[in-house]
Image (cartoon, rainbow, N blue to C red):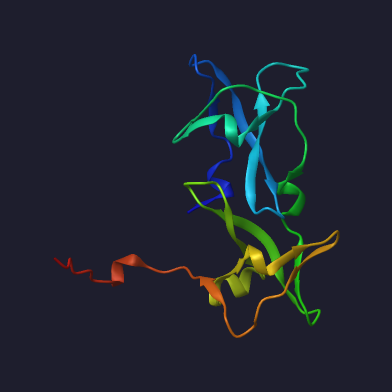
Length: 166
């Protein structure tokens, strides 16, 4: 799984090896739960072509190799970042912080929400499945069950001993 922040400021090259630009934001389709493409901060001034479709992407590694720039518009991740997340009882759960994306097919699997600095340190971040969320104009509605939750908790890996099983 990769997060949206892993894409920001990645360099984008065309098939000839020429730098097209860097990733400025990502375009998503919230209802189909997939990554649509990238907004490109390109090097050409006054260019209306600032979009790369995920279908035109050849490889995503340290850099992105893609076919062609297009002009595009749609829902950007920055449009929903920091949007409030409410449950069905009108209780505020937190704010949208990031998305978890499947590396193989670029499907959005989950949304990471943050409920504040103190809660982040003490309890970690909540991870909500995207099929339990509805995007509205003012907030994201979470329709999942309260007794089942996923967490992303900071931890120290030096305290653990791992044994290799054969």
